[in-house]
Amino acid sequence: MNYLGLDYHKKYSFATIITEDGEIKEKERLLNRKESFEEYLHKYEEVVAVVEACWSWPVAVELLEGLVDEVKLAHPLKGEAIAEARIKTDSIDSETLAYLLRADLIPEAYLRDKSNLQRQKILRITQKIAFLRDSLKKLEKEEADIKEQIDARIQELTKAKSEVVRDSIEKSIIELEQGRKENDEKRLSVHHTILELENLISKNESLFGDYSGWIHGVMKKPANSQKKG
Image (tube, rainbow, N blue to C red; front, side):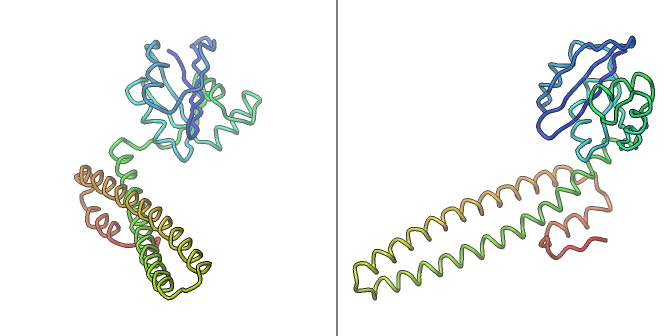
């Protein structure tokens, strides 16, 4: 059996594999992509992995899925205490995790099953959709305000007699048009993201059962109107 300790970060993960005899087989920094993990782990037949229960642990578990025999989730605070007492270190890195796993000293946290992880992920997506809808309304208001300013400048331009004043007004109109263009690009990007997320929700709607009505309600409400229970 081989033991994998994974120290997960936002863009990269640090991985250490040790054998049953405690020999370090390989230490590597991995890009957080499935193909990077596949390349790293394909040469090992029997692997048990451990990941610390950080905020993004579901992503780490998903990267390991299908590539190792088992994934364990380590409780961060209890793990630090055990590491300090047994291995004389107060930090939890990939090597420490691997040694704790080999010694059967991992204080396990609750590892939710895949369906629950998927449900939690999509519940977070509904909140993001609501936030993006709120942002879209703000961008639409900003665009209307910019258009109003441009119309006002054009009216001023028709009445201006001084060439200096006309040049100044024309310059401000150009700047406002540029601002409207940038605003329009942001608005289209937000709208596209909302459509993608709504499509993801619809494809997984069967997971939610009694939650479906609540999800659709959240998706329709602006983020600033939502209250935490």
